[in-house]
Image (cartoon, rainbow, N blue to C red; front, side, top):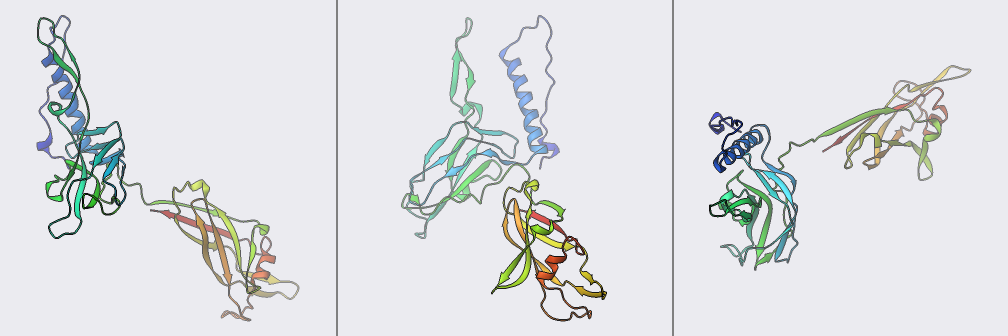
Length: 304
């Protein structure tokens, strides 16, 4: 978190017609704009990986590949890799106990003085000078004791034995700069048509009613945890006697995916419920759906 001490001393740069501009003037303008951007980044955004920086490396390999990416360190400085980079694993046999050594692959902001020169130009009556430098970060392996939290952005953790990866790279140590959007919740209600319900048979006997619920409108990225229950009447009055029968059961969710799930209604067996009403079987319930029983499925999905 930024503090008052993190706020840089800045001057608002001004120009006037006929002013003689020097390299110092233009460099100061660039420095002021950069300091303002870094102040914005560290004050209003979290540090970590914002985009990309994927790392691949499997057990037995002696090199890893880092994909292009964008990150922000705890000082608000942007860390940008524009081209894929292949990096050998550290040449270590093991740790002090003979087990696999733990190393962390990190990305660190590189100051202008350490950047490669992209372009130089001759001066007017003066020596040549640098006009462009690269924006490459420092990608390096570090033991845990050499990592400065927030300055060195961790991309992956490696277990190294005999100068090669002893296991696939671990990405659990990565920190995202963007706040998590999880959990994501979506809910809805749907009343299936009578012919959209089917009987589920167990050993040839109908024990439940099932229907498929479409959840594609929620746009879940992965399969969420679904919850569902039935809204609607449970009692049927049979003509001409006026005898009442009741449907008692419980709801289950099956065959889940990001865009649908199966809702199953298991009906209790028996002659008389605790209320004194005869119980409706699954077959009888299906016959009354759309007439005496208008059942709505209320569902909710929780992703993350």
